[in-house]
Image (tube, rainbow, N blue to C red; front, side, top):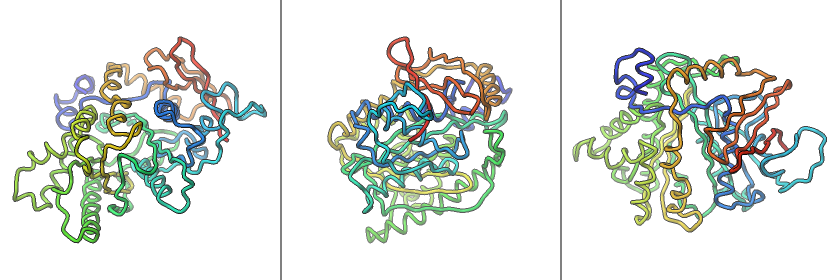
Length: 413
């Protein structure tokens, strides 16, 4: 971000201090939300030795539109039907033997700005807790490639994907009756131009909407807590707070806002409480170390606040417990290896970043092109885009441990 400040000709500290941002992830021309989703799902199944036939529901949350009809979830179905990677085109009349043959998987995509992943998560959790649950696992994928046109909003972009396994007796448990939501109509951030992936943004309004939704969700959350527990909710009842983070400075403002609405304003300083309850989950690289220290303390409560422009928002509660291998918190922390993944990232100069954004602008919604297929910067096991044919069909490959890549072609059951 320091380099981007210089490149954009803005004052020193505008992004790093004003927004609280150190760096920003983005996709190169060989990655997109589908490739990232393929990567995280195969990674989760392989690392935890999950049989693909044991997945009964698959929900995807994303606001990145690849196709206006075909869901991202359908691209992922090849993993559960044919195995991964697929060495032929599933959309042809080929009758290649199915490896797993699991086509009995409910769920599709959820979309509403940054809230889609939360909606997908709730759908899966509700399914497991319902009479419709068939005893198999749910799987949630949250993914986005958030990019902006050149201007003040561009430094708040990002790109990532995460896969979450949902089932009973989990080490991260939902307190399902402790949810406060706020849904309203606003034009703070939206994507009406289907020929471009760039949004229309009213930054000032978006921040106002975020804080208004936070107040409303907190009010409803407190009301439900009091109804369940028979006493007033206090921030002392929470060990950690995690806020949706369009940029880190807004997270700090949000915590201070809740703090001054709580009786703790007469007890100690906001800085002291924020250091204890907010800072550990404000930086991704800190999450693992703080979780590791707290594993011996059962029942830690984490309050989550999710916001999606337009607008949708929910505050909900999780409780942490150690659990049992392979799904113990300590093993999950080890397998995820967040610090290790962060160290494997490659830093690009702003000029190269801008060039890639221009190339992606040209390719958005395009057909009949081949990518560079350059996987040299990708870690083994990463899927990447190789081609979009004349019928807009997308082809992917997986980087193996050897120099050869295996073909992953699209298509759904």
